[in-house]
Length: 105
Length: 122
Image (cartoon, rainbow over all chains, first blue to last red; front, side, top):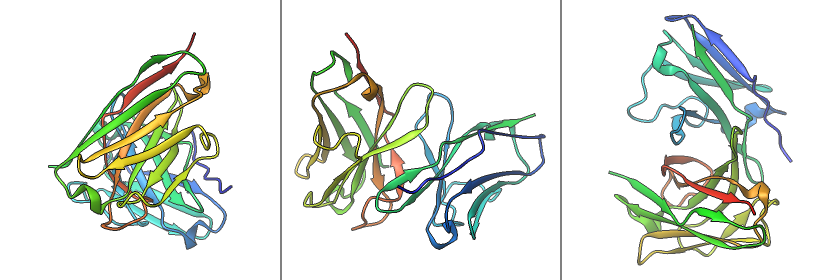
C-alpha cells in the first residue's frame, strides 16, 4: 500500500515561514490534500488538490507538489497556526501521512 | 451551514458491537459521498470506510473489512457505521466527513464532525 512520510515535528519562529513536507513515491502525479488539527478538535481542510485553498483559509497557507515531495507552506506563522498537519491522498484507498506537529516559537 | 453530528459511541467489551450515527444538515446529503475516519489516542488519522452518495458503493480499510459495515439513509440524512467483533485496537475517536465534490468518490473531505469516542475494553 502507498505510504506517506511526514516529519514528526517542525518548528518555526513567530512571523517566519514554515514548510511541512509529505514524501511519497511519485507523489507529484497525485492530488494531495492537507488538514490542520488543533488539540481536541476535528481536522480542517486547509489545502486541496496540491495548492488550492478552501474559502476562509488565509492566503498565508499554500501548497506545492512535485516529484516525490508535496509541501505545505505557512507564511508569517502565527501562534494560532500551532497544530498537527496531515497530508492525504487517494491511491486505491484513502491514505494519510503520519502527521507533523508544528510549533511556533 | 454544514453540520455533522456523530452519536452512538461509548465503552464496549472486546467482541461486542456498536453502531455509530452521523446526522447531517446544511447540504444535499444524497449528493455527496461520506467517509469515516478514526484517530487512536495520541495517534494520527486513519481512514476507515467510504460510501457513495446513493449508498450503492462502499469500501473499507483492510483492518475493519468483514467487521464494520457502512450505510446511509438518505431520507433521514444520516450516515451509519455498524461495528462488530470490536477489538482493543478499534479504540479511537471516530469522525464522519463529507466529500467536497458533488457526486465525488469521498477522497477529499471538506467538512468533519466533532468526533465520537469509542473505547473497547473489558
